[in-house]
Image (cartoon, rainbow, N blue to C red):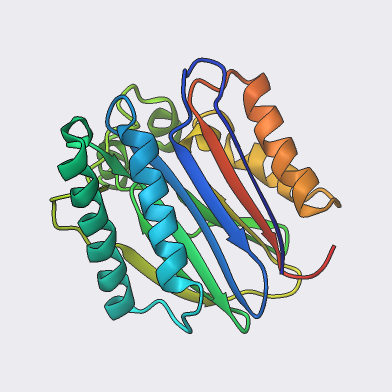
Length: 238
């Protein structure tokens, strides 16, 4: 695997609530989180989620239902401990998307509207389902895909990782080939770029760092009203 991660505050935000982690190897780990919850809350929440996941998963062989539950409970425990020290953090929460790759098998977990995409054979596959009100409307046929993409309430979450609310992450397992590319990203990217625009960049014959930077730069040129975090993973060395 060859990966690169980057985050950017965007054009309008005063602070960056997005966090990421990437580590390559036989056991590779990639994480993106988008925090929320007012001053300091969002940044704290995303950092707690990422640091806890790194601690628990860096030497793991799988990310099954049992491990996902253990991880979620530990993140929530550490959030509550942070709130006990600073009650201004009480409304904090975060999205979370994580890919643990062991011997070519991807163990994917996600909560919220940060996404994972897989490029295989020139086709972009969205591997996660947004936990949003708008996605429910789309799935029920109330609005179409383009209406969903620009809907004013597209960022209203129906599921997020917070200190107190019981939540389960969606889990998925699949093989990653040598020619595949994996993308983890926050909604700061997907609110600005269409899937087609994302695919065009991911198909460039460039290294992971060039592609990740190009994704962020293109989103910035499109307005970038939110923080952006991306992790690009190539299945073979570039």
